[in-house]
Image (tube, rainbow, N blue to C red):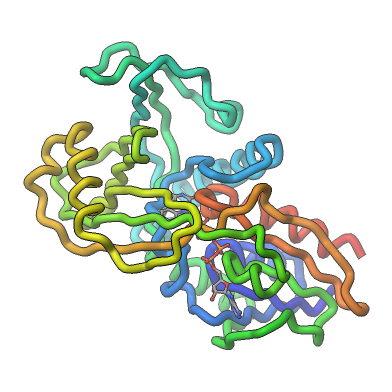
Length: 310
Ligand SMILES: Cc1cc2nc3c(=O)[nH]c(=O)nc-3n(C[C@H](O)[C@H](O)[C@H](O)COP(=O)(O)OP(=O)(O)OC[C@H]3O[C@@H](n4cnc5c(N)ncnc54)[C@H](O)[C@@H]3O)c2cc1C
């Protein structure tokens, strides 16, 4: 069994740490931002493969995570503890659209036949909704319960005092892996009060998404590549709510609770591979774009499999 340092305490680092600890490895997480301060805590979060590549690997990782989230929703005794629910919802399109490339990862996706203008096409399916503050707390307690640790520390390079280092630093991989191909894709969201919504909605235009949670609703969004500002823009928020109200008119009068912005760590392809640096095994796992939650368990399984090879 190996001594492993995981760099990063977002959904990717925590999920990798859980799988490695379950495999019997000694794991310590080091991170500049603790779980509730990460980009992961801003995710809506709906299981949906978005802005992550390549298609084939993303479909496989997504399918694994779908199954694991469905298991957590069914097996965890209290939904309020884990924050995962299986919820049906609808994605609508303004023009005829081919089946989604990730369709094989989702059981039971069906075409919608009746819809209001301007929509002409769409599909419905049941998917995991993950309430990130709750879920990140659950992942943290799982790491600690299995004997792992989480230490706050801003690094200026990957550590070299371990058998294996897992680099799950998200956008931080620009520095940690000297990889300028990881770029921010800014996402702004508005949280509004729960108005009794129990389905999710998506419209690729915008993009627009509406994700109901236990006490509020996350309404998004934006995807601005190369934009680093984490300051919410009031005009963007108004535009987001206006677009969303076309899908769910009750949102027009819903009370706004707060605004948030996160920077998705996007890359031409997710980087998940082992490299050797001066005798230390480095397993890179970053660049999950708009789908870090959706890919989390699939990538964590693969990282654990790579670490266990020797
Ligand atoms: C508005 C919005 C909505 C989203 N909605 C969804 C969704 O519905 N579904 C979905 O699947 N995904 C969604 N995403 C995408 C998802 O949030 C990301 O893909 C995911 O959070 C990436 O996780 P990560 O663990 O790789 O990175 P992060 O959560 O960013 O974590 C990176 C970790 O690395 C640490 N780190 C970085 N640099 C250093 C350093 N120098 N030293 C030490 N530590 C360092 C950080 O402190 C942090 O702990 C959304 C994103 C946004 C912004």
